[in-house]
Length: 562
Image 1 (cartoon, rainbow, N blue to C red):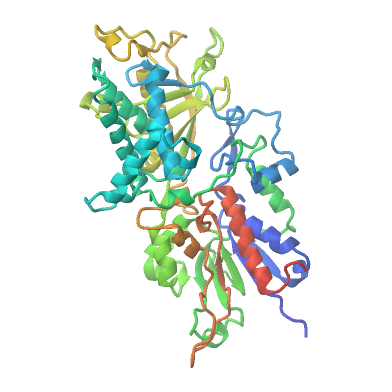
Image 2: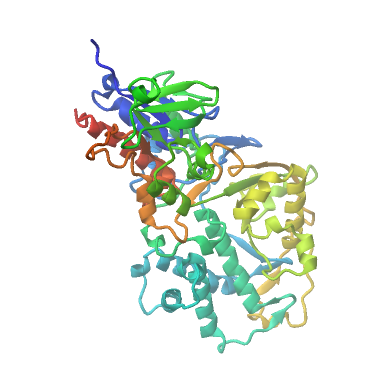
């Protein structure tokens, strides 16, 4: 009699799922040991990696950057398959822009002497929160603000969650900065701006950028204590010339045809916690402990299932209660970790500038624009610029002289973007840009010299014409039922321990108690970026998690190193 091979089913054909499949398939001896299958609910592979094209340029709808090339497995694969060079233009091929134009609402270009102190303060505060203070001279002035902010966070008696958040810490640092400079310089007005309002708005611009980095729609929900656990690889951050999808396609190419099945959305997972009777006794379904139900009504039995769906999908499954994905429901330790962790939405908006036939392309004059919005909006200003534009921080060509501009949105603004029609988006972007890049110089007010000796100047659209937009393309991660958001973060009320709990396989203990039935081990395993304690929210975190769970099964069957 031929022995039955263990059947391993991986749910999700993104980075984590395909990495796990490759490890299991290519490890010595495992090709003959396992019956392996990857089921993907969508019609494509890649998950939150989705390379596309817009107006002839290669763009990323999802994952965009290799976050540090030193030690990154993604960078190593990209080098191996020659994906870092391309003849076709692609998004951010120039890297991060070195020259930016920072403009305050109303069309006033800000001199670096105003921008740099606030920007330096913000960056030092974030470095302090991330445990990088050792890189700085302890006598550095900004480090002093960091210490005052940290003390305020730990000593406040107000109660509530804000004292434990990154948002609260950042604002205490800004307060400390203001306390130190209040007597050094008199605050004098310039139009609708004062120095303090400008500094606050510049600080908010950096906060909005940080929201897109973390996916926390409100930084007051981002846990302060966990921030120092997050790790990045050293070296520069780069994009992939041939697209992030080239990494995914390479991983998939190593698997035999038919191993990855598309359009197979799992609707229910039956499993056997300790003390439950085996399925063949209870339901007559055979001797494999896990049963998967698919949207088309079909089913599949498995010995082990590696779940790589997003944290957003897992959150939805526990909110649904008895009608959720897991039967019986997940144990409390797992469900509570899923509930506590944060999972936000970040969307990208691409817009195409029109071609001006009379004088060539006017898009080659569009700057890398950082936008400083009024924080305290008058009714008139609120009506002029739509609210969903007011917390994006930048709009810039995706590479030098490209006709395609890119802006990032997080939180409720990102969600609103998904519901808007193209015409509404074009109108909103056009209206915003008209307030930042006016067609002619703003008249200087009588007291314009008072604010930093001319540090604020009006910006001119040198083309003398209005920038016009033609097409738009946006990501829609929040409303996609296969993702329900973008990536995870450690929310206030959770901790890095919850990320570890996310990675715990089920059943948690398979040791027999007196008089109880022992369930098969490693029935359900969890992978994906939200299961990695130090590299969550990244593609390399997903990669590492896929390796981890594949190795867990290889070790279980004593075939590692065979």
